[in-house]
Image (tube, rainbow, N blue to C red; front, top):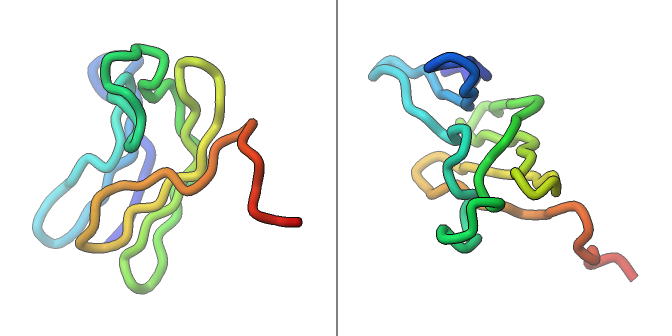
Length: 94
């Protein structure tokens, strides 16, 4: 399995997973990031960086939202995409 960043439909970009079964879109330009309000256009993805995949098939990448914040996103094999951190949020470290 491989994960990659690619352009499609002109300038649109996305994160994709290639397996023996085909290609799956993980995150796409202008689609709402998980856990955020779908009605707010600023919550759509604007850009992506550094997709990686581990031996278990878990995918991690940086995704920028249209409003400007950058988030860290994880898609574990067999689960939905999740945002685990976003710039501007207070972290759990004390």
